[in-house]
Length: 354
Image (cartoon, rainbow, N blue to C red):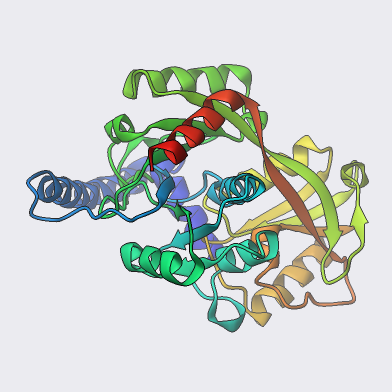
């Protein structure tokens, strides 16, 4: 699984050169053209009124992105849910439910939302309008957070927030599967507000370059800069918490199944860890016992002192093999670096408009 993902990213990023790489990219370009035609046809059907956009009797805030995963939507949705709750609002999260199911038939995002937002209902289903009706009827929800909702134009919204990863902002510049874009970059014109994420892991020049491109694509759209700030390490299966300084100089073996496979290794290196190896899996990958046994053996053979993964991965792991380096979970939180007033103002405006 991880090898096929790495190979695919090598091709679409252009790292894999030669005639073979060029032929693969040419084939993927044909598929991307067909995908683009499908996207354009769908947008036309909505523009002509042949497909209907329906509204709900509640404030709807969409959180989405342009690329296939990897922008850090989950920490942002947690932050948004907490912010709304602190203001006394009844909130619910509506998700499509991508990816494999973890323990109890639930996705990694469902498990993480339950852990971080225990009082917020999380409704999963392809028909987000029906889920919204249920949230209003059964939970008296006043504000609905549409998770991964930018492309879900079938449901009206009061605020469209788009997250752009400063490390990989535009999915190598091509539509799926030639690149990672889910729709053309000009779609950013629909955004009401753009949040640049992981700004702490990119250079200032890189962040400024992305911000400039966003301004060109979405003129007049407010831009907020944010980071996914590391908080602590927790030993998996226990309440034992270690400070960030614990990882400095420590030999670490890491693994994750995130949309942006570079996020965890960059964070660990920035914290001063001696990263021996990072094993990436496809986004939402469901770890099997064989996967975990193999990871534990790799870590031990590499001479690791600790194994590290993310919260989103940890919720899918009941137990990690014993006898070797212990598994630790890196906790992160969404934090605004600049433009918090723009973000708060946009949310409050949406709440007033409902």
